[in-house]
Length: 390
Image (cartoon, rainbow, N blue to C red; front, side):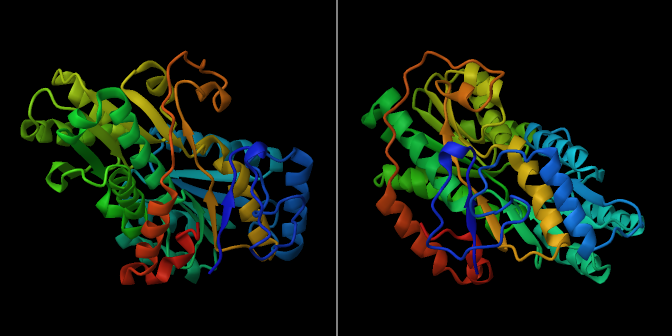
């Protein structure tokens, strides 16, 4: 199994000398692509090359089906916008459907794509139990698929480096809480984690990584002061569940929170604020809630996934697949910590804030031990390509 890490910006491009080289496809190489959008001429050249191998099913132009996770979630809206911008530049059509965080809806959307006779499908769907059924139908229709963030059996994968992203967020949260409130206070506090069990073991590597990263930074933190809940991927559910958990947390102690995404992390923050808790430290995942990150002093950082750049790789991946190019079976994001102090470097619409940022240290030794444990987990035997080597 192979995977490549995709950088967020050119300045973050990684050396890939230790992994197999793949042929450049009209300027696109997943091993070295910096995440930026290709010029229209490159994208149109990709379309031309793909059509020579896989003519459009309608005889005229390519039609790609994009099933979004839920269109009104900010992260998902940014992913959709990037896909549509790239498709427009390439001169291809995209049919957008909304999976509404529901497996049955995702299946119905996949069936509609088959009826529409699309050339390729980009799937962003949350219910792991429906993944195999959806893929069986798309495979029978001979429609190639790439899955975003939540893998589907037999599809290519593009998205979050779950173990590293989670470990970064959890370890940053622990260090930030200590810097803000002191070690003694933090050790009497509570760590709240918003999970997403319905999406299966791969996103669980993200939330599990958050807990492992937190424990790597604070190895003596009491186990019974770690509280988890099912966030269902939304701010509203996270708010409700956190509100329920607060009855178990004494007044006057620090509360540290993180979750599967920025929205669920924001739900933790809002519930703690409504309960008038004063020592709150929250770290998000995604960095798509930019205004919250910039303006809420207790939302101290987020692990950046850069959803606005997803389309810059997904459309080239789709066209390279249609062109018959050999591609890695997984392309993983290269994450960075985004804080109020550096957010303008990633989002030009939001000003960087003049705030003090912690001197963060990534617990490398602890992370390598965490990766070893993941590789030894028999439940992850079939997804070793989604576990980074370092």
